[in-house]
Image (cartoon, rainbow, N blue to C red):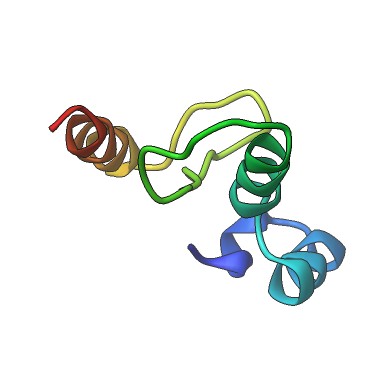
Length: 69
């Protein structure tokens, strides 16, 4: 995922340093007894409430199908 797409230089800097939320969320779920069925992944949005960037919906579909197989 591209920190440059964040659209805000401060947030882009934080993303480069700390990464995205998918991994920390997955780690917390596992710590509380959850079981991961796939690699945590994030999807990039144009704005905080959408829409997704072009191609992200297809990436999400591919990821979800992989979880089901």
